[in-house]
Length: 255
Image (cartoon, rainbow, N blue to C red; front, side):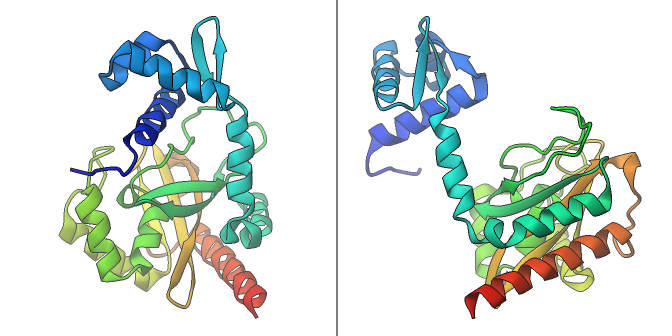
């Protein structure tokens, strides 16, 4: 069981996650979600309110816009975003407005989207929306990242997170995953055929310099939007080219 040096900080973080999930929530909902006394939930919410991270509207709490500034600062200082933003925009133009392009990094064994320019006319929350922080094995960018990590890192991720099923197509067998990672190293890109969201298809290539895996760039769309066979894909070539450009940007910036 994981232990935390300061349990109160963990509790506040859990409350933030509850508000993120619910949008708005009162003390009763927060307490019930975390199985804690209402007085504890109230104290944490009031403290978060006083430091500016939570807003109290008629005894219903929501996250404040301060999180926007925190998120923007974290993104803007991330090396992959700094050197990959322009190429992500260029790829979005190249694949058209029926597909979503994602610049993704890995944090704590899950995928974290750094940048996702929304196609013109895209419906918010539509079928091609990318989920929040999916496990690495469930999607194209995550598998592309895993394929270039060390055996020790892959083993650690599998030990900590396992292979939970997100859809009927999710890889849940370690041998099958390792075979897939080997194929990704051979082709240069990863494919997701409804593994993280049913009816959603994606292709991704990792951005790697030396032994550092910075993340991946991906294209996603509805399953009928483009064809993939895992070996020959014009979309695959586009994401590999974009990843190569970002890799070159990072290398040149370090010189």
